[in-house]
Structures are given as C-alpha cells and as structure tokens.
Length: 257
Image (cartoon, rainbow, N blue to C red; front, side, top):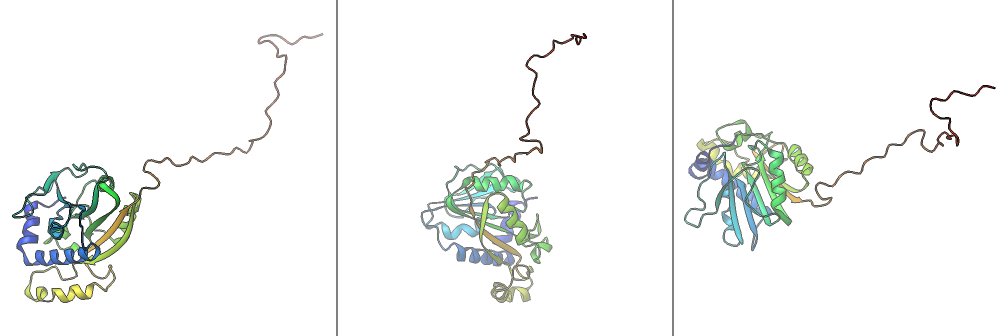
C-alpha cells in the first residue's frame, strides 16, 4: 500500500523528524555516490528528497512517482522533473539509466518482482541502483507515524536474495536512520549522536532503514533456457529383437504336415 504523496511531502519537508531522516539518508547515499556528472539519474517512489545534490552536474534527473501514490511538482523553483507513471511500466528507454534510487517504492509495491524487472530493464551497462527499504529489525518499521512503518520491511538477507533472483549483484550496503523515531525534543537533540554511533554498529542492531547498492548482471542473458537433463535408460545399448525376414502374413494359419 502506497502512502499519499501529500503525506510523504509533509513528513520530509514540513516535520523536524522528516528533515532529519532526509539528512541521514542523503548523507549515506552521497558517501556511496559523491557525484553524477554527465549521468542520467532516476528516482522511483518518493526519492525526490535525495536527488537535489545531483541537479547541478547530472545530464538528466527524473523523479518517477507511482500512480497509487500520486505526484507532486519537483524541484521547487526549477523546471519540473516529476513524472506520474505505472509501477511496472516506466516511460524510459531500455539501458539508459546510470544511477537509480528507490525510496518508498519496493516495500509498498504489490508486484515487487515485476518492479525489479523494470529496474533491470532501464539500467544501463555499468549503472548502479540503490534500494532503500525499512529494516525489519529496526524501530522505524514498528511505528506507523513515519513512512517506514508501511509496506513490507526487509532483512538484509531477504532483500539480497530477491535481488540475486532478478540478476542484480549486491555490491555495498549501509544503514541509516539510527535516531529514535520520535519528534520529542530530547530525542531530536541526540539525533546526531545516534547517527554517528549507529554507523559503526551491525545492520541488525541499528538503523531504521538499510541501503543496498547493486549492479546489473547481463550474463547469462535473461530467458536463456536451462540445459535439459538427458534421461538414461538402464536398457540403453542393448540390441533390439531381430525381425524375421519372411514374416507370416496376418491371419494365416501355421502349416501342419
């Protein structure tokens, strides 16, 4: 189930907790991808809060927003890059995306396998995709006051297994949202400390969201049939019964002398 785009906008742009979440997620992403000069960058779901650093140098930035969620114009004060699209049928050419970010897209999709197929299709040679999903073991997935409390949360193993099934190779992973998911002043003041400490802890012990960077595998090509196993009979190689050279006509009686 997708959240409404107005709820997502209000969280990330109009609440202190949402702005802190935006800072945490964007900071971790920029450590993986510090620049995108001359590249095509695409976000799906509600990835707009993370893509602004790429607007200056990227060749093109596109924000795809699924129809069940709704769309909003973005970025503010600049030419619009937002596109309302079907979840599994994107208006993009095959193999032309260099960087792809999914935020609030995979865990809320009713057809995740088809969505991953579409991600694989649009990603170009050498391209990278960053999946950001709620951490099943984190506190954020247990509170529905944030967008990370909706949809299906994942464990790192669950997500990586699903990516490998669709011919993605997980390359790197990171965690984010280590602060407590509350807007109370005491928790907000300690947010920076929690984020700093949480980055050195295992993903299963900290982090409301985890991020997996993956690349596209193209060999073997999709649709390649598996080699069929040849069944070997235990009687294989034995000679067949010999057939008489002068067979008796059908219906004839044996000659009796």
